[in-house]
Every structure is written in C-alpha cells, then in structure tokens.
Image (tube, rainbow, N blue to C red):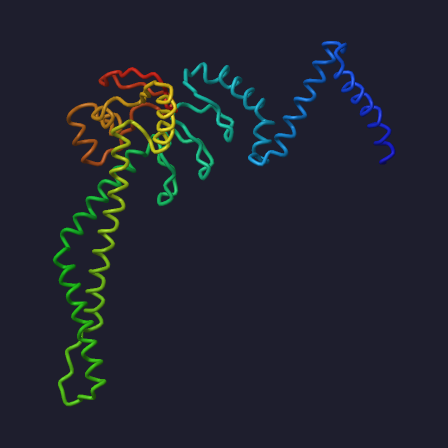
Length: 312
C-alpha cells in the first residue's frame, strides 16, 4: 500500500518541485509564475490557520465555512429578506441566518435575540425586545417593595436586635453564675425558643430586604440610565468602543436609536398618549412594544435625530 502511494505521489512531488524551480527564474511564463505565487500564498494561509497561537479549531472552521455563510446570506437576501424589506446588518455565523440591527446571538440560549440586552441567569432567559419592559418593571417594583419593607420594619428590627443583644448578655450572666456556683440566687429569665427564632427571623428578613433593595436598586438605576440613552447593555460596550474610535479621528459618534430622554422612555414603555402612563405603566398591561424588532423606525410623534454612525 505504501509502495502504491509513493508511486502516485512521486511524480506529483517532482512536478511541483519543477514548478517551484521555474518560478524562481525571471523567464518563467506569467501564468506559471502566478500559479506558483498563489500556491505559496495558500500555503502561508494554511500554516497560519494551523500554527497560529491566537487561533484554533473554531478559527479554522469559520474560515473554511466563510464561503458557505456568504452564499447562504446572499440566497436568503435574494429570496426572502428582499421581499419582506427587513434591514439586515450581517449574517449570524452560529444560526446561519440574517441578523437584523440590534440583534445578537446568545451562546446560552443558542439563538439570536432581537434587541438583546443580556442573558439573565435568575430568569434563565434572555432579556430582549419583547420582554425588556417586563424585566425593568419587575426590577423597579421589586426595589420599591424591598425599600418599603425595610423602612416599615425599621422599628421591629431595632427591637429584635436589642432583644438578641439582651439574650446574649443574659446567657453570658448565666454562664458566669454557673461558674461562680451561686445556686442560691434566682436564675435570670430566659427567652423561649419561639421568641429567639422570631427575633432572629426579623433581623434576617430586614437585612435580606435591605441587601436586595441595594443590589436590585443599583441594577435598576443602571438600566434606567441605558434606557434614557437609547442603548442596551451590549450596545453600551459597542458604542463606547465606536465613540473612542471616531474620537481619535476627530469625529463625533451619535447613536441613531437615541430619540431624547423622554422619547426614549415613551418608546420603551409603549406610551402613545397621556393616559397610557396610567394604563400601561402604573397598571399591569400586556401591550406589545413599538416595532417588530426587525427594523427600527421611530414612531411618528418622535422627533427624528440625524445620526452619522449606526450602532449595531
């Protein structure tokens, strides 16, 4: 078997060496010289993929399937997206599907999410276009509830904490009395197990509510700032890098999805009229957000802002 391979590969290697030797000469034909240069370039590219310390198997697979991504992208754009007038930015290399603006692929959910903000491990789901408002409302009202419980139970917390300190002091005095063997004295009063657990539970619940109010309140404030700017958590990092890049060139970055602070909140909460602040914000509502998540056009009542760079 090895002899047959050597017989087959021997002439091929000999021809290749002859081509390489002819390529070094100046009198080599242009066609042959071009073939030799392409062969060397392909060899360098192959070695860079296999022996590059910054790459790996994923890099080699992505490079090998890049023509497939290009073909699928153009086929889908020609037959599907062009008819639906969906503005796509690129193609997702994981889903192999056109990716509209503000859409990102979640490696945990293994799918593309429209207007993806982040993947919430507590919800075990992604926060995106259709549930971003519900997520923020949950965080906001949960923070208000924790603040209300912490403020309302402040007196109970102080009484429970003082009772626990008193219990510790009584237990200490009791141990000292036992150590001094003063059995003729009246033993100090003790708290029952139920009283002890009640006081400790009140202290624990107050600390729990206060901790959740601080942590969840900070998260709510952070998302409120992003909503006021018309950004998501992912776009915050992308726009920051783009802003630095354009600033180095003496240009100004403008987010095309920033309609102003008040208009951003109206778009996010789905407020079209004045009464919607009551029926859609303060009261529970299942209305859908503005747009379909594919294309991003401002509502008619939003003043258009000029933008030089699109953040995707």
